[in-house]
Each structure stands twice: as C-alpha cells, then as structure tokens.
Image (tube, rainbow, N blue to C red; front, side):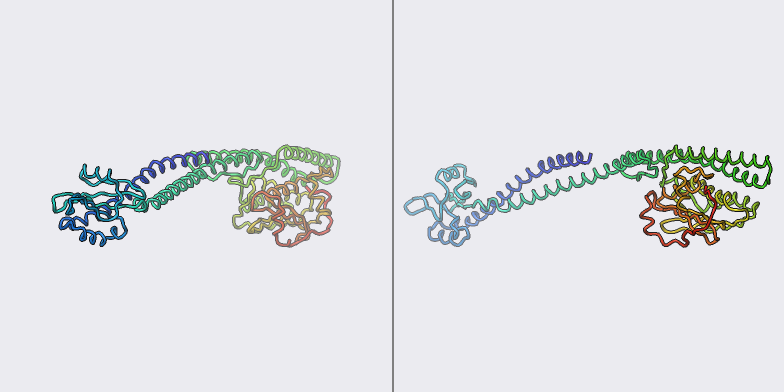
Length: 467
C-alpha cells in the first residue's frame, strides 16, 4: 500500500508539473524574444528625429556612430534615392538581404528577418522628403534567449521539488496507514503465540483505529476468559486445600486410637488425591502470563484479604502474625487469582509444616523495578532449599506435592523474577518471591541489577516435605 501511494503520487505530480511547466517554459522563451525586439524597436525609433531633420550622409554617419548599436556595428540606415545623384543611400553595417528589405517596403511596417548570428529588425521611418527610410537593428541570438536558460532551470528545480515533496508526503501518508496495519498484524501473531499482554495503540486512520479497538477488546476478553478459567482452578485449591489443612490440624488433636488413626489416614489420602487433581490441572494448561491491561492486581489488597482468612486460624493455634507494607496500593503484573493461589500455598505450608504457636509474617516491599513478597516463619527451617524449589518439577512422592513453592516460582518467573529460600529474622524459613514490574522475561536481566539480599539461606533442619 505504501509503494502504491508513492507511485500514484509520483505519476499525478509529474503530469501536473509537465502540464504547467512546458507551457510556462514556452511563455518565458516568448517573453524573452519580445523583450529583445521591443528594445531594438525602441532604439530604432530613436533615430526618427534625426531622419526627420536631415538625410545628409555625414550627419547621419555621425548620428549612427553616436549610438551604442552603431558603434558596435549593429545599426544601419537604408534611404531610397536620397543622394544628389538620386541613388539609394545606406549608412552603417548592413546584414539584411535585399529580399527581406523588399518585403518590408511592400508591407511598410516593422518586420523581423533571420540572419546569420541572430535577427534583424527593420523599422520604417518617415523622412523630410516624404519618403520612407528603414532603420536596421541587428539583435544577436544571445539577446533573444537571454535569461531563458536560467528560467528553465528554475522551473525544472521547482518541478523536481514538487515531485520529491509529493513523494515524501505520500510516503509519510503511506507509513501512517501501513504502520498501524503492521502493528495489528504483529499483535495478532503475538496473541496467537500466547503473549496475552500484547495490545495495539489505537491510532491511525479511522478504519484502522476501529480495528485496533476491536482487537484490544478481543484480547481483553481472551485474558478475562483465561483469568476466569484460572480462577476456577484457584478456587479448587482455595476450597479444598485450605479446609483440608484445617481438617488435618484438627485430626492431629484427636489423640491416639484406631478411629483417630483412620481419620488422619483418610485426611492424608484425601489431601493426596486433591494434590493429584491440582497437579493434573496445572500441567494440562500452558503457563501464560498476561502483562497487559486487565491482567494486574493490587498485591497489598490481596495480602490483606488473605490474611483476614488465615489470621482466624492462626488465632486458634496461638500463632503471632505480623503484616507489613500493605498500607498503600502495590500494583503488579500478575492476575489476582494467581497471587491468591501462591499466597495460600505458602501460608498453607507454614500451617502444615510448623508446630502450633509458631509465629509468621508477610512483608511487601515495593521497589522501582520489582515487588518483593516475604513469607517468614519461626519454624525449624528447610534442610535442602534447592531440592524444595525443584520438587514441583520432579514429581516427588515424599508426602508433599511441592506445588506450594512451584506455584509461587512460576508466578515470579513469568514476570522475570524468581523465588528464593533463606533464613528469616524469626529464626525459621523465609520465602522471598521476587515479582518483576517490567513484564515477561527470563529473569536474568532483573537479577543482574538487584541489590544484595538481606538474608541468605541457612542450613537449619526443617520438615521433610514442603508443599
């Protein structure tokens, strides 16, 4: 489309320039010719007063020699039968042929004849003897075309400038029309590849702007549909694993006996089956993180909401709880259901794998390029942090699915961040979730610019399984 517009503009402008420039060039040439002959006619008329007074050769020779044309040999006077012997008198340098002179006598008006090197203007002039003399003025070829070449060059330059300008304008117009279409096509390809955060600027011609609005609306709808799907999966985790955690804790307080053991075994079996269902659901869907409009959430609000739920259970078990950094909104490029699922998974780990009465805390740190969520506890710690982080991918069957840390790790890595395990100030484990604010990425660029960690991982002993 862009080159088509350029070609059309080039053709149209070239035709317009040709249609106007050629006639104008001819007019300029004709004007230069008229100017040259008008000047010659005016100089020839300057001898009329002398011819009206006298036809004496000496006087006329002086008059001719006194003029610029006469001194240059470009002036001549033809007086028929003016001498004492009745013969024709010619003064000055003659260039006109006898034939052209006879034509001028016959028509008795100004005439122009072509001679070698230029043109000759013959001007009839009445003399005292009631006869007509003819003043001959030679006009060189250079005077006739004086300024024509310069005028033609100017016209050619103006025409070329018009053509170049029209091509440039057409090219810019083509770019303005083509670029939105290219962006729309590129965004469609990216959306097809799973990058749900891609959006198209709503700019350009009205038609392409409408197409961009429709595309963005469609992409938002796709994000919303996928968010609803993931929210259903998250609800499965919230509605099953969280009550199971409470049920497991209550079953632990039943004491000993066959009924109590059967109850605890049934709870563990049910929890394993739920973990298998959750793992199957997570593996069946590709992990696509939408970093565009409609995909973010307020991390501070989510933390406050989930802590309202978990603090009630913590109060029943006598666990001190501290929450910090949630006073102001903290926007992150993560869907709300994913953050809720990650927080519940990490807090569920604290309740399942630390004794009752163990304190824990959540801290949210909002930086320029990242948001850090710290989940800390005062438990015994993790024996092998690297294995705990890898368990979600290894499919271990040691009593823990490893999905808790795996959920948080995938959430962080989708934004260019990561998850690390270290020793907390409470004496137990600190799970640090680094969420990048620059969208999707591998995380290597973000890690290179991060400040040193406050607390590195310790080597304490902790529960065998980490969820």
